[in-house]
Image 1 (cartoon, rainbow, N blue to C red):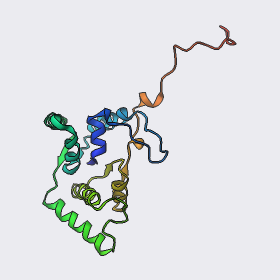
Image 2: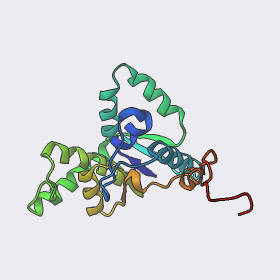
Image 3: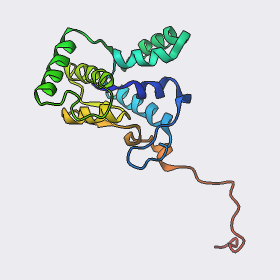
Image 4: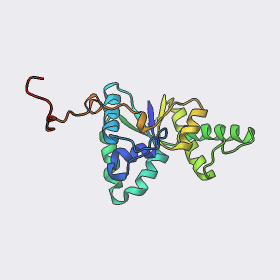
Amino acid sequence: MVVFDATMLMLLIRPESGVPLDSKTGKPVSNVQERIAHFVEQNDKAKTRIGLPTPALGEVLVRAGSDAIKILEKIKEVAVFEILPFDELSAIELAILTKNALDAGDKKSGSKDLWNKVKYDRQIIAIARVRQATAIYTDDHGLRNLATMLNIPATGIAEMPLPVEAAQGKLPFNATLPENVNEHG
C-alpha cells in the first residue's frame, strides 16, 4: 500500500486545482494529469492499494462543497483506492510520534510549519505507519520531511513517471521542412 495526501488527491479529482511546482527546479510540473492517471493505473495493475487517509480526504472534501458525496462515491467505485480511517491504532501511533518528538525537545520535529499543521501531518503519518505503507505521495514540504525522518519514502508529483506515450513526446509532422533540404536528402 502507498498513501496519497490531500494535494495528490486534489490533483486527481480536481485537475483544475492548479499545477504544483517541482521542489527541485521550482518550475511547474509537466503532464500532471498524465502522471497521476498512469500512477493509479500501474498500481491498479500491480494490485497495490492507494490509501487515502481520512484527514487528507477531509481536507479535500472541505473544498468540494456540494460535490462531496459524488466524490466519495467515485472514490469508492475505484478498487485501487482505500479510505484509511484515523482509528485507535492510529491514535496510539500518533501519541508515540508526538511523545518521541517532545522527549527529543522539539515537538515540531524541526518543522517550520504551524503546530496545528504538524499535528495534522502526524495523523497522516500515523495512519500510513499503522497500515505499513511503503511510500507517501505528497508535494507538501512539511509532510515530506516528516515522512523521510520516519523512514517512509516520500515522492512528489514531479517524480512520478510519465506513461511511455507522454514521455516520448510528439513529432511535429505538420512542420514544414527547411528550405535548404531537397527531396533526396
